[in-house]
Length: 263
Image 1 (cartoon, rainbow, N blue to C red):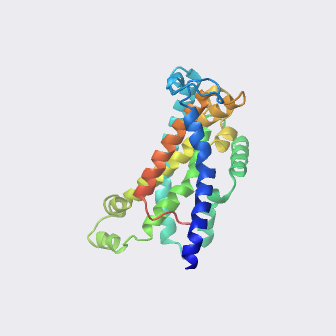
Image 2 (cartoon, helix red, strand yellow):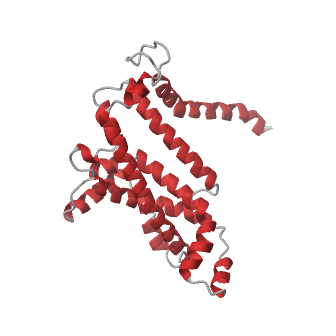
């Protein structure tokens, strides 16, 4: 009886929370189709601002940089994160401190990690550019990939590894033909998550990019544009970035329904 009495209240709270989260996003997407150049005046539906993006050389250059950073950092983070997950899972009873250290980048605030990476690159004498953004994103994404793959390893049957070794397969062959095929959905899910985080990430990229437009990513370009006011063109760009992120996150969630492993 108490549950039935509280059901309307819980539904109202849920609706209020969802409205608080998604109404601003819905308004942004709607304004990206506004024919008018003013956000407060609606003059009909139009795709002119999406078309304008293809004629903006700064946006296209930033999008290309973002794609390079996301693809390279995702590939490296996925490979290292998968191997790291295998090592941590096998040593989990003896490596609690190591496990906490590995997952620290997930907990540390982005601004702290960004300053730490900036200080490291400066002390090491490394010139800033796209390569430093890629290295920084690998550090940031490594823990997330490892976490997703470890979720799959919780239900992994290690007896098939022993069977493969008993049949004479080497460690590399067992990894390539036995372990990876079983873990592949989680590996792809971790890669999609890493790609999404890399595309959306701003603070770490801003601190490790250096000077010049050659290392400007899409979030950095959006930040530079909104300093002069929000235009429908920015709304269209934000809507596209959000759409890519939602697609990647949805695919990652469907591939790895087990969820992430908390440190």
